Image 1 (cartoon, protein in one colour):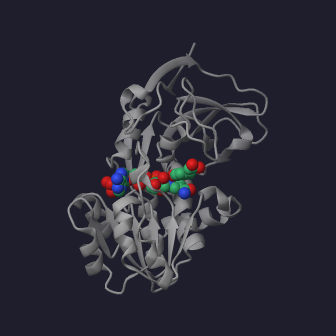
Image 2: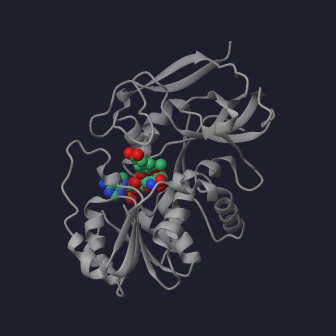
Image 3: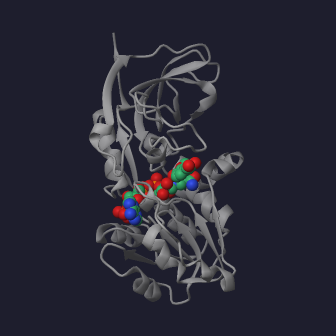
Length: 335
Ligand code: NAP
Ligand code: FER
């Protein structure tokens, strides 16, 4: 009988997750029920939000319980179908979890067109992270041509797309990322105007040099001291899209701050948190636009690829610590 390997939550992480918080299990390959497809996963996504989902904290979605398969988006091939919507041999993505085979209801699956971009892109630049960049910049922050955009987490899945979309829209773009290699990538390969290595530079000083006219839009992926520094350079009528606060996700005690909000009063700064799902009705249009930018060579994407379900947990832990450049994916099988 074919075996399905999956990763389950073994213990709720305290602080930085460790390998023993996860356990690899074997189970029979599931049988699709009526209306379901059986998908063999090619790539699975590891994302920062999963840190919240395994913490047991109340959120917009139920937490992963101990012993349950870790949630996560994945892309793969339909190998059995009891659905009218998807045929055997087609490609789909959806929340399939950290496992090699998944039986999933067709209403949770979306078709993937591998002629537009390789499979892995559908959980990255053409998936949830890419849409997050698009909506956060264009609908939440509302960038205008000629503005200066600063993005933290600049070399990650979301941040790398944010900077390029801002460039496409005629903005000056300054990224903040950890390490010289990541900074060189976003400027030399992705066309950012400048990049600041928060691990090697004083961010406040570097921002003053890189943004002599101040910052009109801050796309915040990280929070913490980096965001404190950016807040001091925000212009009158600037906007902050609060996308993520990854510097706080492993925090054991709630940290205090931000303390620099007095800036927001005379400068009439607007800050707004958002979830990518708020804009779901626009996904088709957004994806068509992103795909056309990819085809036109204006939107590039990077990936860091781990291999094998047994390495999903280490890929996740590595991503939280900055081991990835571009989107972190885990390859499980050839399509
Ligand atoms: P990612 O940026 O590809 O990977 C996470 C990155 O975070 C790491 O590579 C690391 O890069 C950086 N990081 C880790 N600890 C940090 C710290 N203490 N200070 C500064 N940077 C730190 O991940 P992603 O999928 O693109 O997500 C980026 C952000 O967007 C996350 O905060 C995520 O929660 C958020 N997000 C929000 C939504 C939404 O709907 N609101 C949707 C998707 C993602 P460095 O090497 O540069 O430190
Ligand atoms: C994310 C960070 C946080 C994300 C969602 C959340 C979809 C939501 C958290 C909550 O509801 O508590 O990267 O991505």
